[in-house]
Length: 488
Image (cartoon, rainbow, N blue to C red):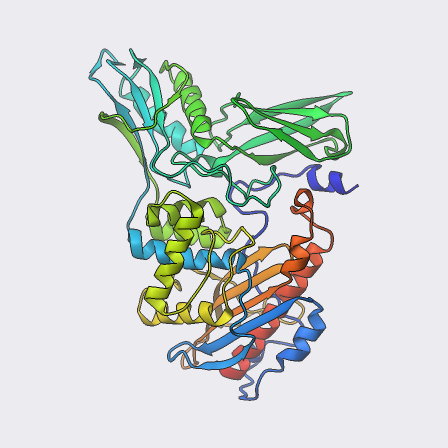
């Protein structure tokens, strides 16, 4: 049963995005030309590879000299296609330019009055700084430090401020409610704004747990509830409210399993988890109250994210949509994704002289459009201007035409991939050992009409989607394989 395959025993990762796990390009046929030492200047026969891939839709690419930007080969170079998560490479460049590589996101705990006998004479405030990487264990360690300092509670209220970033229910409107990669956005984030749902069959009934688990802390969550419904479909139902109510089809559960579900009010979620962790450490707090403006107060404790370069390296590797949107919004300081993405598109035009049409910072939405020429050009110019992404892009390596890693190959493929339903992209750098020539490339394949025809409820795993993506990635690997031999 398809539903059982989706859920039974499924433990979805807390970090990696479901729709895009940054795959390596896969090739098919013989050994990579570069690895075999065969140097040729004959044009790559791309059309035969494209026909064999049987993708439908469109295939566009550009490969250029990394130093000069001279185009070596192209196909439909000016055809706008959805970039999917390749857009995150643009976001990374934008954030580094606007925020700087050493920028850190800060989460603070403030007191609006003095501390006497362990009690704040006033309110305690949890103030978010838009950190998309905050995890439960870090929050637990912050609470432990506060307890060790002698903090016991407050005479006033427990307040939380999540206004450092706009509060948005999700990134894309055309995604199912239950997919964790379509995260809500807030100035307070935790566990990529997901809650852990676990179930186990016990006789004729089910044992269900909902928590904000880390590796060392396991706080239960009360503001998200999941009930088991005796049905086969739909897989999930969702009802927003002060308590977010989910139901899940019993026919999909098997004997047990777990997955991460999205939280649509992250600020309230983080405040509840903080209060639970505090109570466990002997710090008594009232239920959290959201405030629209950050109160003035003295700092009791703080958490800092890793430097932006590390945050972006992980974003590019794991393709975390929430990170992309948070850093993009922080860089633009605007209040809607549309306006922020428009500002980023304008920055690309002013900085690199090419046009892109982005509607978010992660590529999750299907409306964004980028051409292969524009993507390759901005990567080449960024690198030539010594502000490129090569140090933080993932090395996807070279593979043979069976999709297996080529042992001993010294050619690096530093790139960002992107995947939506019936949309796949890859862009980056081919770096051979010296004295070889570096290449910059962008490949976009897509059938947007076929994607749009998939009902929203089925977009997590549409029929034929996996096979299409596998063929698209194989084509990408084949092209890179042959470009490395012909031009690098």
